[in-house]
Amino acid sequence: MTDPASAKPRQLPLQVTLPEDARLEALYPTPNEWLMDWLHHEWLTGQESSLFVQAPPGGGLTHLLQAICRQSEETGQAVFYLSLKELQGHDPAVLDGMSDMALLCLDDLEAVLGEAIWDEALFHLFNRSRDLGHRIALGSHLSLPELRAVTLPDLHSRLAWGMQANWRLPEDQHWQQAIHWLARQRGLQISPDTARYLALRGPRDWVGLSALIQTLDQQALAEKRRLTQPFIREVMGW
Image (tube, rainbow, N blue to C red; front, side, top):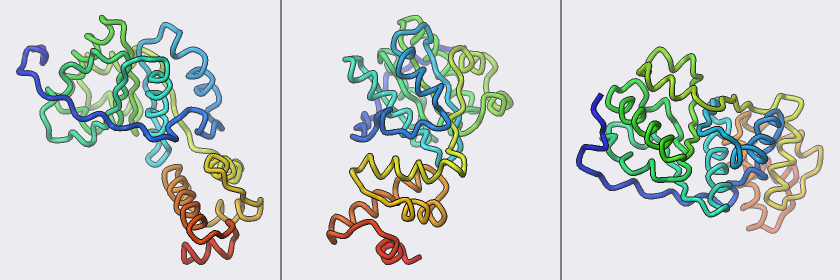
């Protein structure tokens, strides 16, 4: 293998500003309590140098990775969040220098894996980060066994080095509670009947549900209305 660090350095992508709500406390914990507990109490102080998280599309993986970045940032560490999906078709030399980050969060890993030059660049990035005592958190919509078929074997072994977790959406019986959770994060009051209505009519993915609650919150604030079923039907056209 050739080390991409020997190539001409490229300017790093611009750092994404972490959203204000990108906090572990803002994530509905069920059914991921063990991972949330581990992130709160062991990730920053334990021995694991990497974390691989698989989640379904729309499951809130980006929010989770950004929250992990924010957690480390608030301890004074240098962090960087990057969606690899946005780098498809680009030269992986953009990764040069990222091993200097105390924590690097790479989202949408499956977008570039399987491309030889990206596999090799990520392989060397892993090695340099580990040599420096830094951490990497990785997010993918594909599991490690699914990625094995397309990924450079040496890189796949690195992906499996540290903690591995599946981030799951709430089960049907917890979806109404998840809606209450999201509403509380925005300071919204919502009745059990209204939450049940949203659970039945709204999207069954975390990204879509979060966007829906945000839309309703903004519209309710603009019109100075309460979040009721008639109001939701009016706004959403249901």
